[in-house]
Amino acid sequence: MSGDQAILKELPHYDVLLQESRQYPELDPSACLTWMHLLKTGDELLALNDQFLSSQGVRPGRFNLLMIAGHCEDPPSPAELADCTGVTRARRIGG
Figure 1 (cartoon, rainbow, N blue to C red):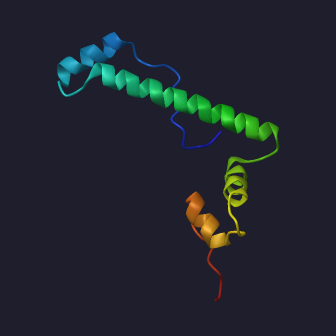
Figure 2 (cartoon, rainbow, N blue to C red; figure 1 turned 90 degrees about the vertical axis):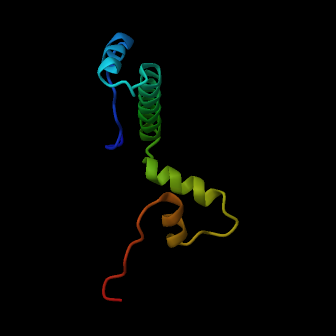
């Protein structure tokens, strides 16, 4: 699994958020709970994706590269792949 996932294991009950909204009137308990459910669902989907790719012997970064390269008419340059995947470009040492 990726290291930058939120991994929400337990969500607060609506009553807890409702109580907090009394102290912080700008807090919308329904919106907050919906957002947390969305984050948890995203975490679970990312974990399943990582698990599936791992079972196929592919890391998520390589899978992304394969998908990008597979949809290009001409082979993309390393710089184009870096731009498409949000990875920083490697620098040449001494040149």
